[in-house]
Amino acid sequence: MATHKRSRTGCWTCREAGYKCDEQKPHCGRCMRLKITCKGYGVKLKWQDGNISTPAKKPRRTKRKTSMDQDKGSSPTSTLSIPSTTATYTSPSFGEPSPDSTYSLPLLPLASSPSSSSLLSSDRWLLHYWVERLSNLISVAPRKEHVTPFQLHLTAMVHDSAALRSTILSMAANHLALSSNDPSLRVQAYRYQQDAIHELQDIVQDPEQAVTEPALATVLMMQVSARLFGGDNDGAVANHLAGAKAMISRRAASTHSSSSSTSNFLLSLFAYHDILSSVSRGSRPLSDHDTNFAAVEGEADMQSIAQVLLAVARISQLQHAIKERQSTEHTASLSEEEDATGRDIQQTLLAMDFSSSKTVSDISLTAEAYRHAAFIYLYRTWLSIGAPNPISMEHVTRCLSLVSFVPVSSPLTSAHIWPLFTAGCEAIDASQRAFVEQRFEDMYEEKKFPSLRRVARDVRDVWGAKDAEQEGMGMEKVDCIQVILRRRGREVDLA
Image (cartoon, rainbow, N blue to C red):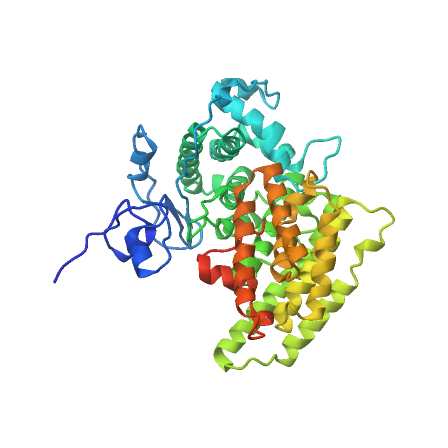
């Protein structure tokens, strides 16, 4: 009987099955032939349950290879002793080389910390790019006289945390590679990413370090990085939310627990990503955020959006409860409790009228767009209806209209992916679909986040599925999230 050697450098689908992989990119030949999901290539992080009795061995540091390909051929799996889930990083793809070197950009001094003077010039240059450009694009909070929450709470920690610094440098290099069309920065981004993984491994071996704010910030920024810059063809995008949840639970039980502004910012960042990830997973949030999520990014002006997101979390919990019960009872009918919960969430959303605000702002427009997107999500979950049902279509029209009133240059558009996806997928009018496509492209040109074009392609996939059902009147039953989970084998990047 023939035996198969376990692949060490192939795609993760072949590695896990123990088959030789031909390592074709972006999908290997075996996966394409068998029509199965190719999970991509790269380093895989396994978050292990910290309660296991066998102590985790300290990771062995290997000598740095001279090329990215050699890095990929090293140990395929890295283990972190936080709860059991899996996260995958993929190696960056290369574009066309730029005729102009990005290093011609001016290098301005960083005044954040005296320790910044000990950094390499390339690191200082990328950190400056983070402070002046990237942190502004990631933050959804409106610009004020003071710095953005990401600048305020993360930049200071960068100088004292090697893992967080490497993560930030990787993000800056990835984004600058796209902005400047300099593919050499992709190699730098990958190497910074590897450094961050090794440095995080060291942190989680130390019980004291593992519950600090820099450790939690590192895991959360790895999550943000994977969402924004993860490969389009990955079957398993890195998801560090379970690791972040474990850190937060341990912090709550330790002397590191605090209600500082930085701690509130990190908790709000976790809540924001956890709730929106629950929508794209088709499952409930990992944590209950009723007591620790008062405002997005901890900014008082952003309370209205957090208020809607807490209702979204309840819808995800309702969806999970319905699925769990239906899997055992094999009936599509709602229970009395589920119906009552749906009605209660509906009344909660009806009571949140942000359009009556005396002054119309990007925040109030975004909060209203979120509210109408939440209605669409609720009716899909509770009543199993969507377009072309008139109830859903009313909210689709109002949601897209509200989004259109916010300038693309506004920081709030960084939070528009979910309402634009939710309403956009249900759009059946040609002009509405054209607006959705153009809006995603305009947002990409403004921010240069690859996830924006990936979500736009997801929306087109949903339109194709809906249009295919039009003659059979099954369009209303097409679930947008389930279409992507089945076709792409991954979540939609809604955050």
